[in-house]
Image 1 (cartoon, one colour):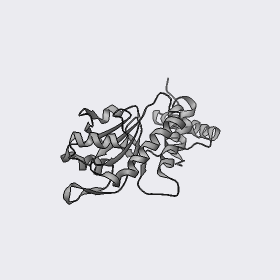
Image 2 (cartoon, helix red, strand yellow):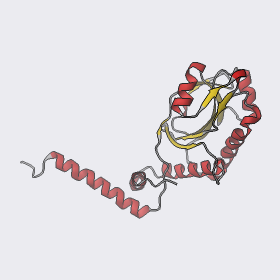
Image 3 (cartoon, one colour):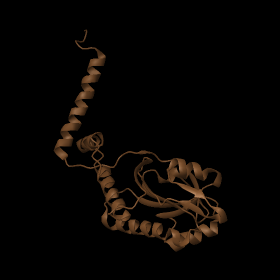
Image 4 (cartoon, one colour):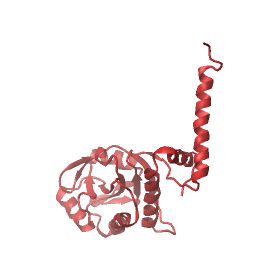
Length: 224
């Protein structure tokens, strides 16, 4: 029996139906905010402060906050370390991520010896599990950090670096959901913790009708 509508028309109708359901769900669950899906985070392989190798695949399924420094940074990076420690403690106390783990990574610009990396990690309060310091092969660091994470840095004489302090929030699918480069009236830790909470709400509602509402929020650019 010949159908009254060609296949393409049925496909269009089905697509419009899904969009309609998404819009209706969005209206029901409003207000909803989501973090933008900015771009894919780069793949990487790092050596951590214990001399172990860990890769971007080890962060799949977690929410991970990255920052970028080097072992000899000293007081110049104290604000970075303080922000990472504050975010770690506040997320643990204030945000319900369910079964999703929250991790932190301080990624070195490259060239640090493991003993120097370990000393810097200890001074910052990184425990090597929830918060790790890692160093990439110097030949790949620029590609990973500069091109992949879009964090500016350049070597200076004497082994130092000029850089823009940067934090990058990545979800469990390896998608960048937040970039924090500049000071605002709200503290950086406040913004990051608030955004982790927004992401946590999306993760908790990633199934069923509520997921359509969140996709509609992405469609309508409902960003905090």
